[in-house]
Length: 171
Image 1 (cartoon, one colour):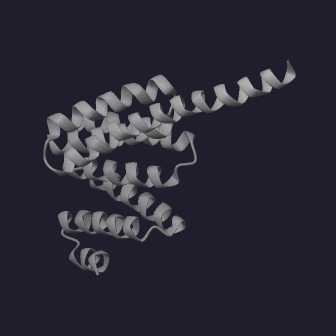
Image 2: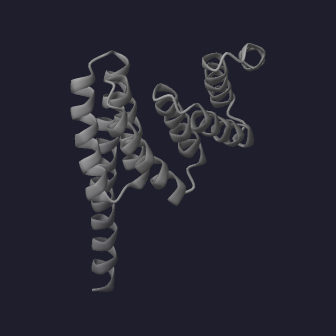
Image 3: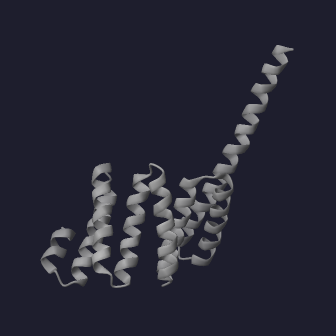
């Protein structure tokens, strides 16, 4: 009898784990598809995939995927000029990333919020977001993130006609 219980626990557990991993892969695929579609310019389809991924992430309690979906949805809203919606998505993404240990996601959300602030003329807030993103990326050794944050800081300086500062950030 004990052998049968052991056998069943080993055959049921992998099947259950397979279902769980399959569901997680599925929700990540929605989010990755939404991200890719946004780069290709199909914002409506991207938003739909991201909303599906976000719903699945909520259902499965996957805060990493929720943060990613909200982050990408914020970028789409910003591209469409819906800055209040962009800010709401990005601030929720930032809060989720801060709850976990996703410092790279925190840096990315701050970077994205910097662009929303800049588009709305809140240059001091944008500079703070880009600066915080830069500090995190430097701590992580994320060279791409460092370059992106420096670019954001350069754009803020350019908008404020601080040309020497802009040049220093761009070079």
